Amino acid sequence: MEDLRTRIARTLRRERERAALSVSELARRAGISKATVSQLETGSGNPSVETLWALGVALGVPFAVLVDQQANAPTLIRAEDLAGVPSSAAAYSATLLSASPPGARRDVYLIQAEPGEHRRSDPHHPGTTEHVVLITGQARIGPTDAPVLLGPGDYLSYAGDAPHVFEAIATGTSAVLISELR
Image (cartoon, rainbow, N blue to C red; front, side, top):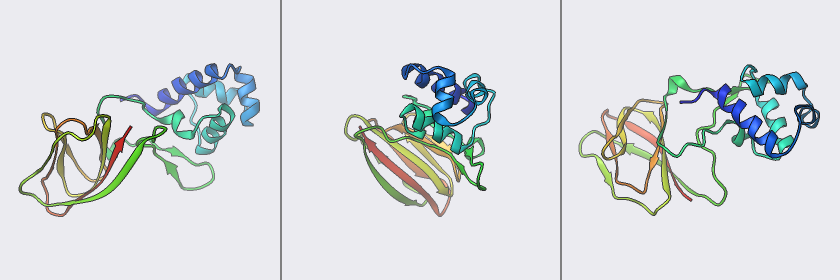
């Protein structure tokens, strides 16, 4: 998985170039120093939520664009690998798991499951992606041919328009499941 600083650097440069702005002009519009923008574009900066928000506003893009992985393959984020963007004003950090694309439809479910027979799902509408954050317990979730063992706090996204499974391994397993249709 791509490191958060590398992702921010790549995306910030791409969006700045799309907007046809110099580093100096972007810094001026965002109200931050030119050195900060340069550091972020080289992956050596350590931005706060506020800095990224100001850059997003200056570029005319949502905060999520600057930190989203934009992957088409299944995305797995282990709880111990979360790379949040800290606030400079409070004990707070924001970790984007998945940005909602324009025109998307999302349904959010709380799943409660117990060990035993696992839930097999037939493919949903074409373009469906499912996102799961395991809250408690342990479960094998994802594509029928390659489910992933998840623990509390782990995040997984996978194609919902292909056969998939949810198998509770531990008693009292619960998860948040978001079904997204593009």
